[in-house]
Amino acid sequence: MPDKMQNISLSKIEPNPYQPRKEMDGEENKIAELAESLKSSGLLQPIMVRPHNDGYQIATGERRFRAAKKAGFQEIPAIIREMDEKQLRMYSVIENIHRLDLNEDEKKVAFQKIWETDYGVKGNPEKGKSQMAEDLGLPSATLNRYLRAVEVEEIAEQKGVSLEGNLSVEELESIGRLIEQKPEAAKELIEARANGELSSIEFRDACRLALSAKDKHKTRIAKKIRKAGRRGKRAKEKGARHVKQAVKEVEDEQTGEVPKQQLKIILARDQKLLNRAIKFRSDAEKLDMTFLESFQTVELRNQAITNLEATASVLDGTLRGAHQSQDRWTKEWDECLNELKK
Image (cartoon, rainbow, N blue to C red; front, top):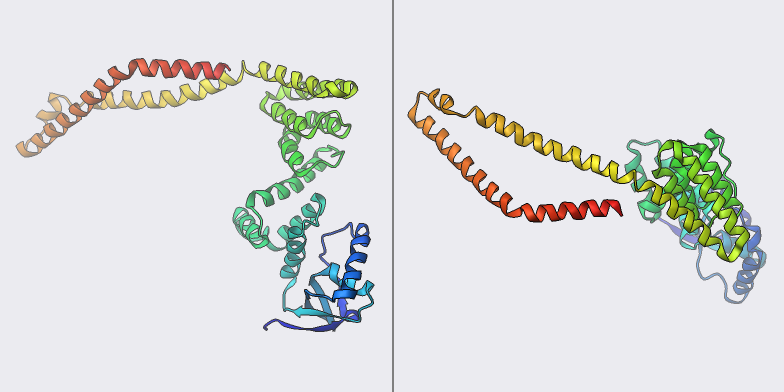
């Protein structure tokens, strides 16, 4: 059914049951200002509703609806559109997102509700997230952060970790894996953030360092950085210096481990390459005169000889290039080792 616009009695209109904004009481001044504007100029932009029971439900325009009631209007212009529950949920969130009306907690709840109800139960989760982000007009990365934040809150509850201090979405994303791997370390950092001992940037740096350490060192590192944050809080203006120093000390401790890990990766990869060369040589050794004597047809034997000559030519070129590149390769390896030690 196509949209239609008409004036509708306010008494027949219900608020959107999926309205994600919870802090409506703090908007009374804005509603009053809008009501005064409506008295002088009227409502220039209609609200959108859907038919519901014997009346209508708001899809978008709840502020205008409330202001019209406050201004004493009896009816209001509205676009009437047929829509299902999913569309109603989407409209309520999209309007508030693009007006920047939702705080982070409200967005988390709204996105999670839409995800669980309309997308998460269907097929491929990653495809569902991409489609949901597209429908909401959001970057996929933004939506993923919010959904991950909700997931982290659930994991924290399972692990018995109290999320004090109302952590931001970015902070929840940073602490998530640490909660999973080492709840004790996560508790230290969360308490430090809640007590004002760490700034948001320091908190995220601390999460990164604790995660990159061996499991047995994670809690010690978290306590070390928290202790520095506590000293910094007491010193006030010198606070950042204490945490920076602790972070540097932890990073210095880890430099003895990280290069070893990276070297192991490099050596494992290079060993695979060497194994290919060894296998090639082993196969080539079988292509001797006995191999050529095995042929009975002259034509096919000659083709085999031609292939061997072509292979030998390629190898000659490779070896010439290798001898010319020795100095460069040695220099590049030395630079790589120096970079790993930094």
